[in-house]
Image 1 (cartoon, rainbow, N blue to C red):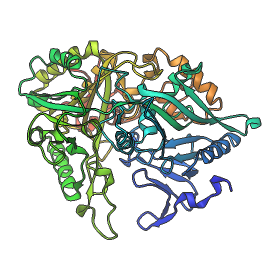
Image 2: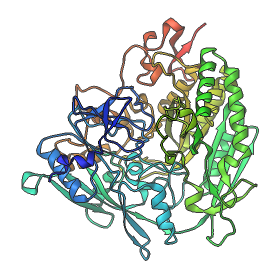
Image 3: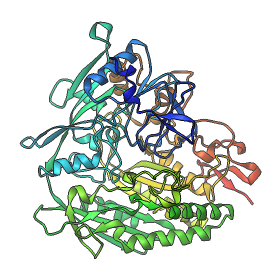
Image 4: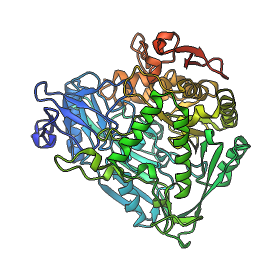
Length: 594
């Protein structure tokens, strides 16, 4: 029986409040409408950057490589778009959306096994749908470690490789997980004589190693990742001390020194509080005393009533245009984070002081909120436990800007933020600090064609997003100016999986090997089955005359869909007008004019 005709794989059951048939896993919401037969695809945040849902004609959950081959063959034979998504789908970009409404969405929910661990070669091979925590724990049981990993564990191996997931280091093979890929097996379209689909294996050692540089970070446009083999190291422990400095003078010099002094260091900067938290993080032998763990508070399950209260206070501060409320929240966020060591736990129980020493796989990656049990019927969301961003209890709703700034420019960027703080007052940055400030992690250059071509620092900051897309934010211009300073003044590159639409404008010009990537893309998928208008646009691959990445319309700058060039792109009726930046005159931002 063809996989696409197997109704069992669609896991159909009625959801009474939506009058649709749900064929989904817990986080990736994919509702199949019984009247149209199409499926509406949402991410874990339930909202895409443009707030427009994407659709597919069919959702499938293959369990074997043969079933993946069958799905790809069906797509190739029918010239049907196809996209791959994970059970989590925490990307904010529409990378999983097939082109048009008649494509296939392939979920790796049921394709998540460890295939082999070679203890001698120190490698592990796994299917692409395996969860990050499961992978790390499994190899740790063999006294092996993936040297670097993302901080958030609600990812699959295929998902984090597809979007460039990384940790923080300038050491070893690199800061991104794709830097540790030894080989990848892909299922790609093929000719009729080949059965319309086939598998290919790309390795470091073979003549196709150049193709592997494209496949390491493919963004899902080369085919379905079936298996991945990663290079590992002997298991080790990490020793962490958080050094808090209540004066950020000299940060622009200290950050570069930290990058070379500690293998896994990072920086949390709270500019409105003039405070820096340096993470002094190094490896120590496995026999070092300590069984610590890192459980970042922002990734732990929270009572729905508490999440709703935080969001309600945030909305109130916006409605009242009160920086004071935001600054109180920023101070509380910082102080509570320091009190519990940002979630570090000595011996995996509680925080008792520094240093905290623990096994590598427990000291870098954390999560937990995504594993909260579903609520029983008729139980209100206020009584459940959720991730803070879950919309069911009216959770936090925010934008995230995540941009790689070349290491040579990071000191100048920090000085610019300080200058922006001076001309706008520190309170203008409280809206960032209430979301835990600016997280700065060190990133290495990569051989991957879509990886970073030079060492850098990923600057990540989160800030309020209004429920109504036509509503501006308090101190909107400050966040926008920081974003444009990163991107345009200092040649920054957006994180492929978690940045606003406008950050991808002109992105192809920032990757020197983009032509090599496109050559591999055209070789593996000449029909463009794994591409869509969206994926082509954000990567700068769109054909002449096709829509670009930005969406220019009234209010577009408020959502990060465009950089304003006219007042109508802001909210002039609410006194938000398009103006130059305060310190970066080339910036164009939505500024409140009383």
